[in-house]
Length: 390
Ligand SMILES: [Zn+2]
Image (cartoon, rainbow, N blue to C red; front, top):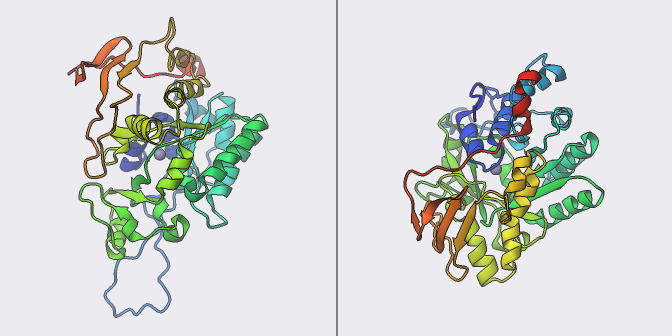
């Protein structure tokens, strides 16, 4: 896939590209929403003595709205340049300068292109205005207004303590005929860039956590306020683990019938290597809150059916049947387990005997086969008409 680099912060592209979602479309959306290279200074706190040595103060990251003068027609033209995309992605929480109308406009463009919208929601936590509940309302509202299908990415990490409430809102929207889906990963921590807008002032209250709940993946260092300020204000991209959820919430979310399993993978977080085997080990074998077949459905058929909105090729994914692509995992349900941890995030899982991708073994007799890359990207139907769409 071609990545449009201009205007996309390096880390955002890396994060989005590894997100396990429609990376190109997300990058496109971030690019369209633009990034302010020089975020304004936070107002100086009242009463701060000037003589005192200044600690760097947290600066808000305010991403700009669409480039000046761009029309919806221009936007559609730009979108046509990305024929072949599987969806339109938005990281609204990373682009807080985007107005509600612009979000609706992006949904309109998606609807016209018959593509679903994949979105990180505008905000997390319980503080209103700007709660997770309001953020779910915003995107469900935009889906209802425009007719675009909607996929809310990893509902667990935005809705946190209100995850079940957010899922019930999605359930309500679906009951009224809207095409809304979502997913979750089985970990209590998320991971994102500390220099991002997610950590604009007020994040502690919103997420209900403190500096010590932020951990550097490389060293395991828990941050202090001083360290947070230093890293947040630095231009150097730094990813941070965000311990904002509880095991109780994650355990309640995973078995919900609307939840697909997704890794949201990113190097430095155990979800990258361990998500799927962890579901089979912890929720099927140990906690027994999912049957094996329910767990498999969440990891195979449901995501394939979601992708069928964008490409007929997905009809050959996620099921074992004649004519389907031979993407098959042979594993031992008694032993499969994740080994990746926050300390050793890339440790491979155990219990997989064979993994076939398009009929070619990439794991055989439990061992990784070197230098075999049979996987092929799914591409949206727009690709075939790219010439006429431009
Ligand atoms: Zn994500």
